[in-house]
Length: 356
Image (tube, rainbow, N blue to C red):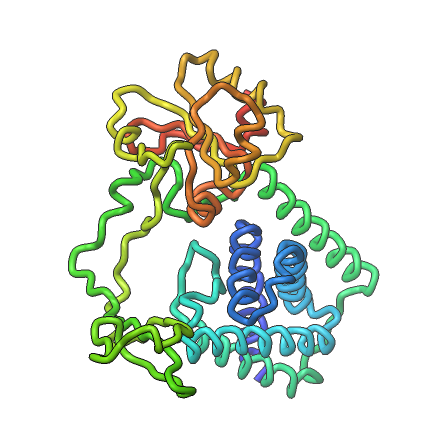
């Protein structure tokens, strides 16, 4: 029994540590996932706190995993882990049964899991923690209290610093489709054998005090101005096989709304893209751009913040991109990306780029 409990304890502890470290590697990615849940639940006012929530959750998950391994404090840690896994099971269950969230982000973008796999994983973990909790008296810790407290404080500090580091210097491991070496055009191709979801656009109108719904391709024969529009929504008819292009939203437009994506991809010379979803005036923009231009490279500012970008008067082309795309391509704003055609040759946060 002791051997079984030890294997179970180490399995649960290491899995929590592993899960927390993967998410801590991309702290902003987790905060964006939280914002996705907030939006679905109608509590988007919490978006401003998502980064703090993400940092605390990752730290708690990793430190609790370590506490379980060192068995200090053992019973309290098990109760904490049970609370965490109940919360995680709720999230994965909601993603699975509501269909409103495609992935729960349990292992970040490095190991994408389907909601079904995530939900089953959490149920198994919950069962394992309950077993450990019922048998907690059979596990003794010989660790000195002062050493246990020191190890937990040290772990908390290390995890906190690591997450601060990735906010300044990009993730340690880039698991996103815009990582160094990837070809954006290749990532935009639909995989062979992909079967898309089949959906129907259902329109909702009110006529004569009654709600009327119909498919967008099958309007009533008497449709006229007496039908008052209420809403429209997508209804899934048949689920596809889940194979989709890794990048689906990469397009860049000039401030005059001219699509310049293909022109950039067909460029014969290397060029530099500076990604910044929003413009932060505290960034040393002139120094950053002059450093790039000293290498005789053409530079473009990619942003969704057109008004503030124009106010910078940087005398470089400004290209407008989708905010979600920019969030995915660059976790730190601004991020410097050196391109050769559609291939990403180098990718650095502006802090690291200026240190060179």
